[in-house]
Amino acid sequence: MFEHTTNLRVRYAETDQMDIVYYGNYAQYFEVGRAECIRSLGFTYKNMEEMGVKMPVVEMHAQFLRPAHYDDLITIKTQLRELTEKHQIEFHHEVYNERKKLLTVGRVVLFFINIETKKRIPMPAQFKSKLEPFFNS
Image (cartoon, rainbow, N blue to C red; front, side, top):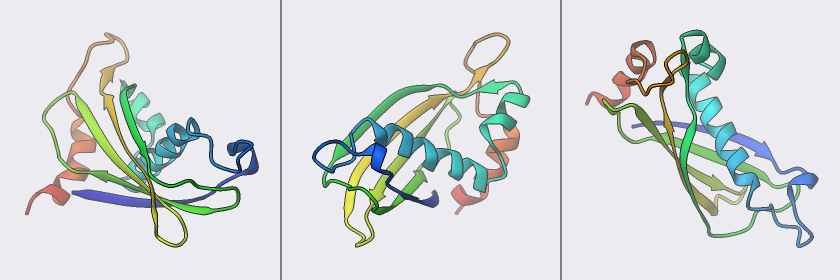
């Protein structure tokens, strides 16, 4: 399993009239977690595109357990729980507040797509080689 954590402070514009983070913003929080997770492996979405690969989101689930509020420092834990041979990658997210209370859990699935053909492709070998050491036990 590969795991990465990212911290983010909730901005005022991300909350609703109840002083709670608007649920739609969790898609962006998950995106920050994924982007930083990938970056920690030495890649960015831009690098992937330069390699001829796009990674569209095809599925997203979230369960909201507790609210986050304006100015909370949240921790986004992002996990890759399996290394697949398929054309997709699945990220699991957990969002915690400063008191280490679990606020939200989520799962996001992305496909690997060839930019030119628009067809699904396996995980790029360069990216997979960075992940393999975390799954060989």
